[in-house]
Image 1 (cartoon, rainbow, N blue to C red):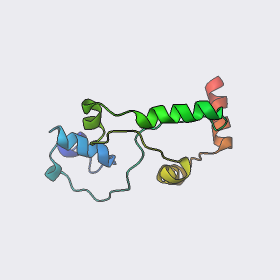
Image 2: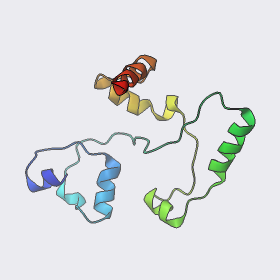
Image 3: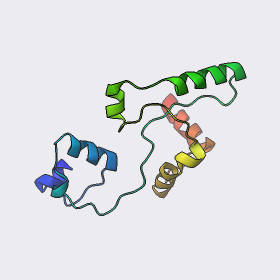
Image 4: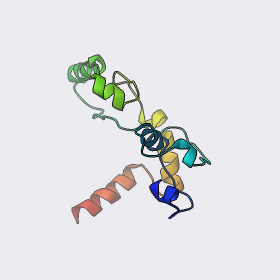
Length: 121
């Protein structure tokens, strides 16, 4: 974004939430840019757990997450959200998979194993 503003680049792909945070912090002004496309928001972060956890542990762990309330500082960082909420890979990460697949990537067992083999080298 800074390169676009300074004239070094004609355009840039920037996550909407990054753009909004930079505007909010006063690093850039919204009227300095022409936004030509906004996608749906990508999930920003998540916690995952194994599908085969012991049921009592699974339930206690989830209760801990869902009962926790964010501090004021965390709420500011997360656009006013005050707690964790459940998401699913199938539904909530559909856009992430769509974009990755358009770029030639896959999120499946074969892709995971290929990356794991690279990491071992």
